[in-house]
Structures are given as C-alpha cells and as structure tokens.
Length: 150
Image (tube, rainbow, N blue to C red; front, side):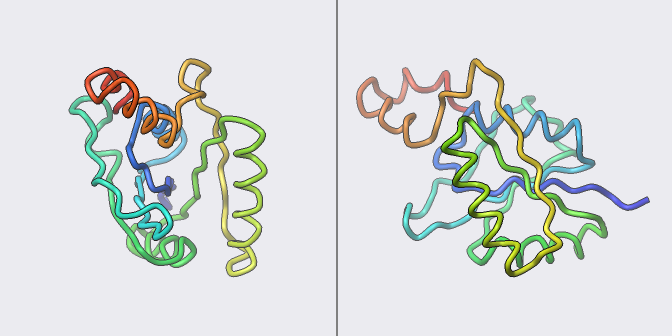
C-alpha cells in the first residue's frame, strides 16, 4: 500500500503552538508528516526547529531543512518514501488563503500534479504567527513567550 506523506513547509522562525496544531491535525490524515523548514533569504537563516519531547509521536514525523524550490522537495520525498506527497498549509484567515492559493498556483505552473491540503488551526491558536510572536518577545521577553513555543 502506498504511503501518504504530508509535507508541511515553512520558515517556522520560530516554530510555535499554532504550527504544532497543524502538525497534530495532519497526523490524523497522513502516515508520516515532514516538517520542512525552508531557508528563505528574505527572512534570514532560521533557528533549527526544536519540538519539546512527548508533543508528537517520534515515529510519525521528521524535521528537515531545505533551500531549493518546494516542487523539487515534493519529487524527492515521493521517491524517498515511495508514496504520495501532499503539501500541507495552515490558514489562519482570509489573508493567508489569498497568499497560499497564489503560491499554490505558481507551484502548479511547474508541477500541475501537486496536491495541497489546507487546514485551519484551532480557535485558541489561530492568532499566533511567527512574526507576531517575535514582536511579543521584544515587548514582554522570551520567558513570557515560552507558553507559545512548541
């Protein structure tokens, strides 16, 4: 039976409980979820993802970094895992939807067979963004921000 692999790409700088919520939802749909931390030159080099122990089943997810187009990553993962890969995207609001659909269309210009899954975070974490969390840390400090970190 072919494996269903979810690829959750992003800069994840930092990786927070909103991201974790999307990963947990994804684990209900896929055999394995790959958290793919992209190196975005516009956002600088991100800190490596560190997920606190026991938040996710260790045998069902992995974390990688990549610095090439997402469409190439999908091809590589499908070959490596001998399965079908789906790109997972989290949508907090209508602005995210507009942005993600536009990105999807550009990626599908290169590979029209790409498959996307859009997930909404639970209400209690939908307001959290990496940029918002960085601003929060600047005002209230890293200790206060720990409650939002995964």
